[in-house]
Image (spheres, rainbow, N blue to C red):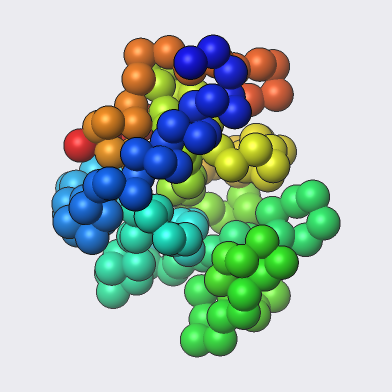
Length: 168
């Protein structure tokens, strides 16, 4: 595999063969042991799509949770609320008003694949690469199945590195 498109195709196919429910439970348990998570009060996660790690079990923890909402080309940080709507990208988003991303202490970033340098392959829209620099105070974490963790992925100057990749 040479380019990001090849990695995306590979990752999407491989995820269909994984036990995402079991992996999701294990990732939630592991995240709860992470020092940055324990110390964080304001945490942003992503709402899962099909075949994506589901971290919604964390919502039962005593923290303020936020979900992304897409507005044009940017991500808005919106508090988790009871009312969610499906976006144009087929992702559930909160119907709450956005807040300043600087209040976030941790952001759990979605990824198809990740590497040992903290680079990720996302879905290709660049939303998180544009968004993450605005989260100056937040620890940035990616969770991927071990089959989708590799030593090196292609990246360019627009790709934003995360602080840690958790894989199992």
